[in-house]
Length: 497
Image (cartoon, rainbow, N blue to C red; front, side, top):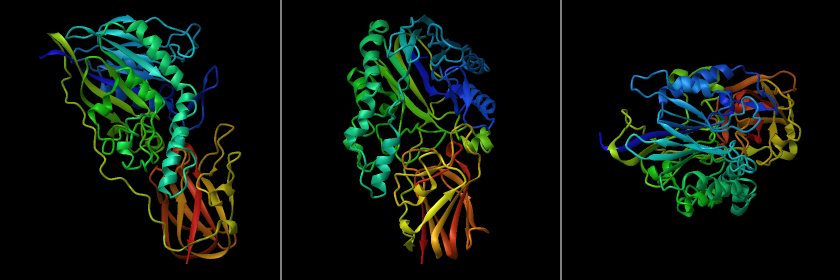
């Protein structure tokens, strides 16, 4: 065994304690969608973690699952590793199941750092422990969650999709990165200028891992402006740059500097990667740390494929996980994982925005639409207004949302001979991307005949169905399944002869 210590370190936000789309109302979790998959997802999540068993797990949104995670990591102890869970979020008067941050490890926990409950960064957002290393020395390990307010992903996907569709961008690059200034920049400054110096000022290696709810200047640099699905967008994200200027490296990007081939997408694994490649989850390192490998996890393990849960949520969380293999120096024979590191798979082919179908577009002014339900402010008419930035959305509030199937019916203003229909999902979100559909037509608006059905990829790309001269006045899209359990249409575009 060579001197020093080699560790697999995982960063993972498990989304409401593995409960999927539950939300916190101030006193308890409430289910957004009554699908009943919460316990199944938690069981499968625990199975996944029992397979992974990283040496150090920095966890976000643990929310009541900590003891079960510790037990899952200890299902197999043949290698002698016995894991301990350490709750990091320990606020005074903390309500049950509000234990956001944890870390799990078999390494000796030499000190759990005291709680600092000073806004804007409390133990709900940041904290950690000093961990002994088998090869000698120690590492300061911190789990982090920085505010999601003023999101850093929806507007970026919209901007990139606008360029891909030939539309003028509705926000400037400066306007996009300004989302960090609402809360995240202040919180990052507190972490770097106050919290870390309190606990990690001895020169030992430092790890900060978690959901930072922002993107990185490394991915959106001028060098990669022409990378697949960047569409020339350059974004100098201030939070990631602040950590870099403080001496931190992004372990995934060190292992995979080619942004075009290794985007490392983690947002949003459980819903849809949409169009623009985006990372919100990071393992950052400072000090004498060597990155040996890094990879993401964004799909359920094979034994969990094919279920209704898998169709609705193809991963255990909305966030993907990141696992980095790191080497720490030491003077003693140390430790290294017995199994080889997982390789990140390169992405060499990206589905392109398809050319519009042949035919003439039915003018938006000649069409009207109705829906089986609508969210306030997102009426059916927005699906035929000729504007890809607006969308119809099935009713969500008050919970529970309207169940599938959802129907969107378009009156084309007269009988037409249809040769194709284009479905454009929303370009600013994953929410409502239709994944199973049926098209039907009618001459009188009463009796409908199915003409096409199938499945669509869960992404932001336009989806075309070619038709063989179907005569109809009314066109109905029925959504049987959709991302996040809802249905949405930015544009439904009929093409005629």
